[in-house]
Length: 352
Ligand code: KG4
Ligand code: ZN
Image 1 (tube, rainbow, N blue to C red):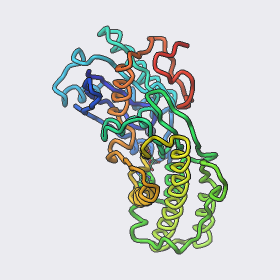
Image 2 (image 1 turned 30 degrees about the vertical axis):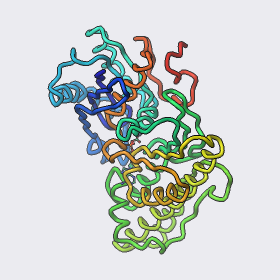
Image 3 (image 1 turned 60 degrees about the vertical axis):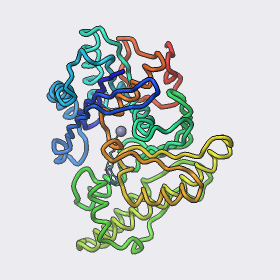
Image 4 (image 1 turned 180 degrees about the vertical axis):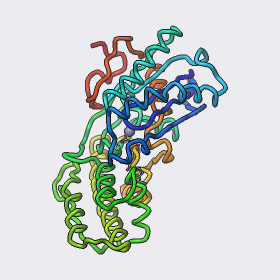
């Protein structure tokens, strides 16, 4: 089965064609991503209206490139999948409406994909991991643990009570005058810095819960920067290194606790931790997670960075996994700004 996937929920315009065989093995045939970050750079964050307009301008061309690179035409795909939420609603509408138009014109099924499910199932495409597994999603918009029991079967075990982890990286980068997106800039600076110079707080870490809080940490970084101003290059590097060390410790400590819960609740299942979302590209966080997983006797799966950040392949793949279960969606399916992974309508075949 061959599926076209469309992703427009934030600041990436993306389209991909993915194949899934009957045994459940996936293959990416083409995967085109156009980032808008330069269009939003002057504003220090994604401007929803600009993002939606840019998706309108570029999506057709990106879909054409995905077909060209695959050497296929639209009539060669079996279904059209698009992110239908959660995300910036203007952008989601652009992708979902385009998908509906293509599906209607070609008489092919539509799959309305939850963006978080796209992240959650990517490791099955890249590493053929079997259910169940624990997922840690750390992106610009989300930070959460979820138990993934099957397609559409998710239990949210914890989330952030304020900022997402990627958002914290982006805000720290912004207050230090680094570029966008912030994560890779902070990571580059951290390479030159002293990770123990600042003892930043680790909010919530002493509490027995699987939630995150990053806004107090971000404030502590701002106060440290204000006290030292004007900052030398060494100060900036030390702040980045100390911030990154702090969040690595937080994420690893929480993951250890989540893996403990996994082995208690699913004593017969192999312990597996999948990391998804843009922040999974961070090497220090990856190393800290590898450590935590090793200590817990768990398998750690981190998809390659290009498939951790937003892309069309994850949407096409989630669409293929749903179709394989006989699930597609009506043309009247509405775009959703908010759409938690554990909502009832995530079950394949659920009829509202
Ligand atoms: O998954 P993603 O592409 O988009 C969302 O769905 O949010 O994640 C983007 C986020 C941004 O906040 C970006 O700063 C962060 O991932 N990020 C990183 C790194 N690369 C991207 N954070 C830390 N270290 C990185 N190397
Ligand atoms: Zn994402």
